[in-house]
Length: 240
Image (cartoon, rainbow, N blue to C red; front, top):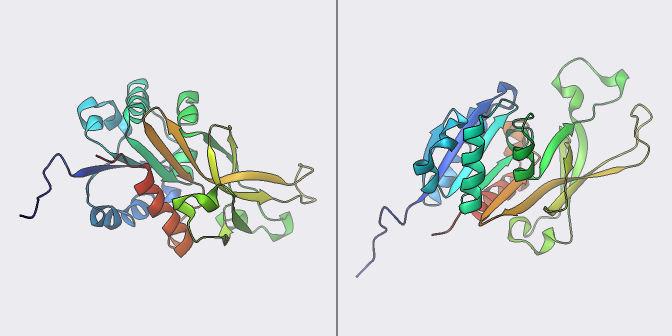
């Protein structure tokens, strides 16, 4: 007799989106809702991070996909988020939606393991005054650890022209890919800076996944970037 999945067996994903509109949180997260549903998740979408303070919701959530750039978070919501991840809820996201959220909260920064610092711009004579001034050609390079990890399997180097994130981080992260900021005469640093671009992080019983590419839908639709994000979502999720 064929077994049937019960309501308890259904995995649940919570999409939390909002903050700065420039990262198009609705459009970008909508790209991955069909993937999550096709992977067996029941998807709930919230436009406020206050849902994190609801213990009942968080206890039944296996994966949080967050896209909230900047913005603020209450003490209760942050506590709920940290506690949920520690108990086993996965947390995943890309670009500013996870690595540039809640700038005023050091406890959030500790949870995700990386904070956006800057995205270097093109040379002054090439700047036209729009967001494309910050779109630089660069590569995402897989680390030795990344080559052994299921998230990066079969992916070597990714060439992009978009924002290149420089993040502040710590060594609790397992860095799967990096990007290198070169020395330029118009920048004040004096040697190349290697910055993590894809990482995972264990937090209690939970898993955290971060990919820094993802400024706009076209970046997330790059086949390699999309593959990494989709795999990262599944990797981070609690399995029942």
